[in-house]
Image (cartoon, rainbow over all chains, first blue to last red; front, side):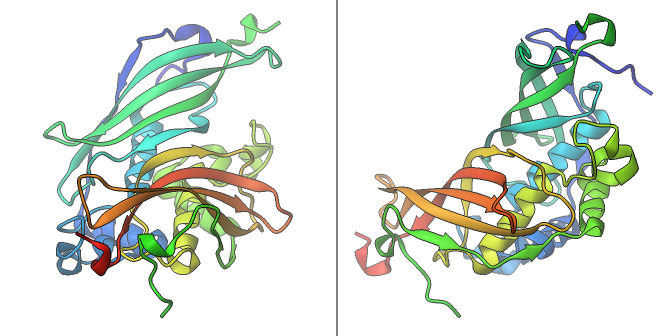
Length: 152
Length: 152
């Protein structure tokens, strides 16, 4: 088990890189069938006639896979990866055969004024494939506990 | 089949409300197991000791269910619901037993300068439960085709 990181263990500019995940055509279609059943996420032939020009993962699937990579091999934050929200962009769609990884960097660290036992960080996370094509950028606020001894 | 809407059919202030979806405890755990395997999304007892105080859906699950409601009963946009990104916030977590719906409003409409056959809209979408508790707010940019005859 990796050592858990509290707010005091983090610094602005700190970087993290996750393990990788191969995106299969089946997984794209399975996610789409449950959550985003549109032709360009379900069927390669139907997708060719659309803006996407071929089967593309739902942006929400890319977001969900990014979360999985972060939870399993991203920053081992004490308290887990707990986000209140942020900005999300999909510069290009995830494709079958993509091998995704997430590269994160801490942009801001703020102690909570009202809750002495925690703080907030802003992380910028790029989800890239094996050719360094950027599939998703998220700038997300995450809650991070302070070390128990640091709390007032 | 509902009539498809092109850019010319839309106006700022136009509102949409989707059908509803009941969120089961099983569906929360199933999504979490695949995409966000953290204790507060997987197990009610483990969740009680966390920030969430009980089983809570992954924010990405709320986002995925919101997408499904939009695709199946939201604005019937010609070309589908195709987003390039936006802002997402989770003011409160989705809970087992929530009956979710999405209320959307068009905030901006812009014609593309480079692509005469399409434009962009900004939609604000609130995902609420049966007690009008807001589980998610998204402000998202969506690509919308112009009517074929309107294109240059």
